[in-house]
Length: 98
Image (cartoon, rainbow, N blue to C red):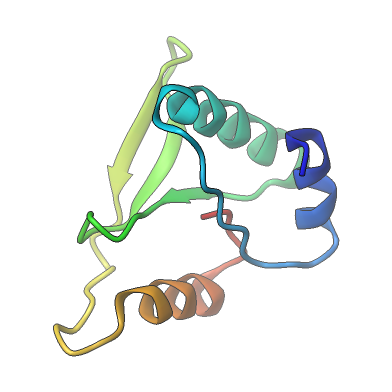
């Protein structure tokens, strides 16, 4: 899927989208997606991966840089499946891009 098609997909009422990108392009793609989602969809973007135990909201700093802000309300119980829990958390909390 082209990134330009991603916003159309999200705008069609699909509440969660997960991206799998290569490391060198990750920050650039997250920064673009965060900017586009805010401007065109008024939607937050969150960062999570299996190796990270927290959920972080992606924000654009005044200087245009990418900032990751931890979501303090996100507390996964130790016994919960990490993938199912994060999707359930986002889906029940707000429409978001993950």
